[in-house]
Length: 133
Image 1 (cartoon, one colour):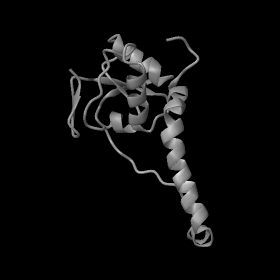
Image 2 (cartoon, rainbow, N blue to C red):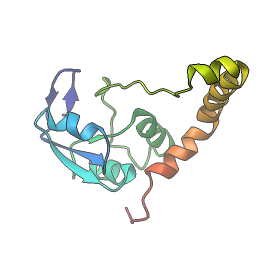
Image 3 (cartoon, rainbow, N blue to C red):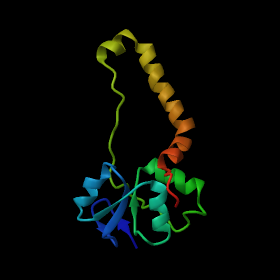
């Protein structure tokens, strides 16, 4: 059984990751062999069929795939503790914000709405591959 307690992994020596993901160095620092994969869906399928013990991805992508396709990934289980978290920001200059306060707030609020409405479909599209599963 694979586990992660926020400090150490157990039950795993190698983990799949989508090609180029930022988490690769993090995983290598824990002496895990990283298997880069062309898509999250391909990686989940490999976990589902026991060809990989684990696959690391962004939480929103993983959650969306598990919710949308429970029958496809019936043997895939999310570990309860996030591997790592990183804050991301929308950068707006102080001058722009000062001169366009309402517009800046509207941009931020619209991005939040778009994220809630469009994100699940975008995540599925982003995580797919043209290669057969």
